[in-house]
Amino acid sequence: MHEMGIALQIIEIASASIPRSETPIQVEKVNLKVGKMAAIVSDSLQFCFEIAAKDSLLSGAALHIEEVPVRARCKECDTVWTIDEPVFKCQQCSSGQIDIISGRELNIESIEIADEEADFG
Amino acid sequence: MATHHKAFHKGSQPHTHDTHDTAVHTVKSGTREIKVVRRVLDVNDQMAEKNRRLFADHGIFVLNVMSSPGSGKTTTLEKTLAQIMPEIGCAVIVGDICTTNDADRLAVSGAPVVQVNTDEFGGDCHLAAHVIEKALGGIDLHGIQLLIVENVGNLVCPAEFDIGEDARVVILSVTEGEDKPLKYPLMFRECDIAILNKTDLLPYLDFDMGEAVNNIRQIHPDMPIIEMSSKTQEGMAPWLEWLKQQVQKKHKRR
Image (tube, rainbow over all chains, first blue to last red):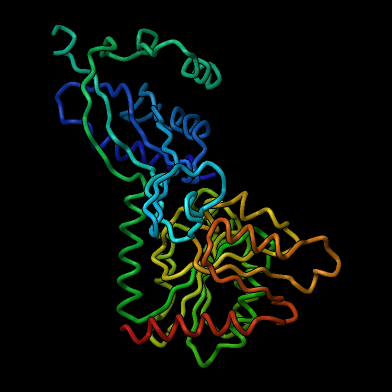
């Protein structure tokens, strides 16, 4: 529901990561990691990003979203597994003492910029 | 125009810039990756930390109250404030997209109440840390031991935003159905305590309390669950007890 706000934040952070240059630098791609338990709908974020990027330094950039599964580790027996249904108990020993080790991400991993040198390399 | 642009980007073909009006032409191999590795909500998290330090300095316990619209947040808080004030100095921040109805109801308690209307912020579906920081400008924190933040009614988004609180409570009313914890796992996972509200309506519903409790236990096995009716105040004592304990603990840590 707040995907437009998230899209604007992504654009702000990614824009600040563009190296300083005399000539305009084209950002080709923004690589994002989104956990399955983050309150974000990927399609909706894509849609908002396209609209919001148009008038920014990221105009024309693609947003690449990598979905991260929800993984947990049991504090009792150390079992690590992927949670793909709404049950937050250890698969092995049914303990509720678990750590969520991934699945809450909402991270910008990197940006990919046009590299003119590479064109000739 | 927008439709065309969207269709273009959604295509399965690799994205080239030939059709874009840009000065730089690149080929697919001619890109360089720059590592960023930052949380998108970094700004919010930093602001939340700033809020948290301020609350710690004043020894104020901050409770973030979340639920879907109409589950009884405001009634629960009205009754709670009436029971714990003036023993505990309270202040309230209320978030809504529109209207000051909830703030007007809560102000009757005598506690300072700040209404935040999120339509200023684009009709936001949640309260973010900077909104709380701004709202704090309208509250004299001296003599306050408990700050209650009544979030925007929504079981999805508020769970994602740290506002600098100490604890989170989710209220689920029995008219909403037993399956809601399974449908909104993030909310039930993130909260420290759950209230199953409107138990006075149970005789008129097919609601299965055992199943609701089991569903919450599946998501958050050791979360305290309080069955109560904020309207009749039946079953409210354990809730008030929990809250008072939390406030005392925070006050002592100061």
